[in-house]
Length: 313
Image (cartoon, rainbow, N blue to C red; front, side, top):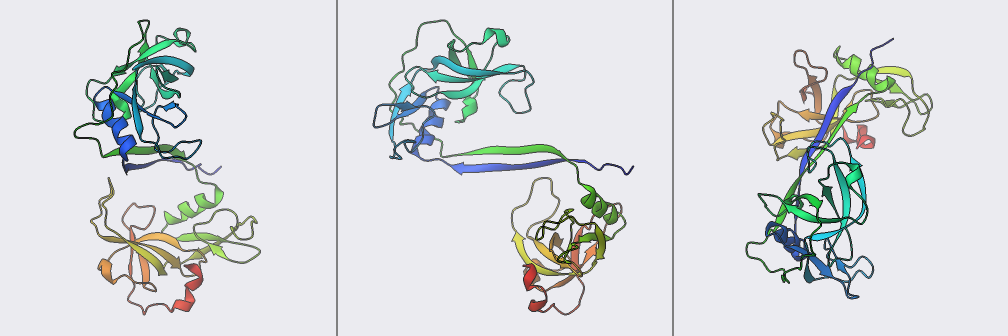
């Protein structure tokens, strides 16, 4: 039985966004241990605040402070916290309607166990020791049996308000290729590029998917293509990727291998980035021990005629 291929993959990038006046005030307030909501025209107070009424779509700007205490409206126990979650021990995810708010805020509740959590229980905010203007300034909620806390009536005006946030986005998963892609990967280890031909339209797809994306029928006939190909289109990368040892700027291109009917992705090297062009003829460059080409370089052949690759753009 052939080996089942699998590999851990991580998709990670910093998500950066600017803040409008409502979100800026909310996050700056958390930094200052103040929770702000926004009042709608019909008197509801939304926490977290939004810039437009979800019912009427009216613009909202009337900020109002609510209390750091509230009531659990619903909950779920998290018995195995994951990396980056608020607590490193089992806790409850809770929706809490803070006193003075008309909507509930999602966060973690530090509790001894699921038997210690119930809908309707009273809780309060536990503030983080160090705060920067982010939802993590609320470290978590904790059980509270004291008197209600009155909000201070803050108007939402702050000095040095938070103008933007950067949130790391990350997805960890294990990828297992199917039969067609496993054969393609095995061939690459021999420095060959193998795809599959559709029995109906006769197009050759590299990398193969196991089925024709046009006809929807299964593919099984293996076809070797390349190794040379043609740049169909490309982009110039000017931002250096984390953990990628490639100096910018560099060029990433769609490359139609000879004999293939689908362009694949590849980096272009061996030529100044501003000399890469559509129609450039290229060939793969391998490094010792690699399972795929490191990059593609010009072959020195005349550029391909546009008519020969226009259907692969």
